[in-house]
Image (cartoon, rainbow, N blue to C red; front, side, top):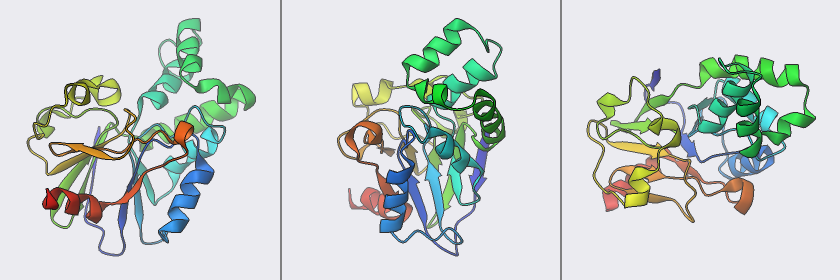
Length: 222
């Protein structure tokens, strides 16, 4: 499942790293850049939820017309525990709790499940957006070597770290740039044409928000 977005001729586009339930921090960053919810668009690399107490509210962002997120591994952990084939199993529940799902213990179980059901159709595995005539892909963790292979989805889209662990600078074919999260970096970094923007907001208090045009200008200057 991939969703494509035409260029935004009315406002600006921004990419944001893993939010992980830090709604107040996200709102602060959006206010700092004068984000206009009627004209601007926010593209999230996934992991809206877990590890932060405002996870339910962050999950609801997927329903906002100005917010376009992809599915992260934490949304998938919640799906497995609450809605998937193994829903209700101790294994699926424990895997979610161990990885930051304990916020759901203080919320109404039915409310969390209902919000997840509403949000998931708005969380594709991949997105593609046109920015100044260039195609930018978005997945949560790791893109394939060729963007044309992004579908059907693989586990690497949600969990992969091979490229960053190897320091692989081989550009992804068939796309101008790709933006990912999942792996925490001290500051946004680039390997080939893949940009890593998860700066560990739940732990560091640093949430990366970058305008799409600035990200592409960084590519052009290298």
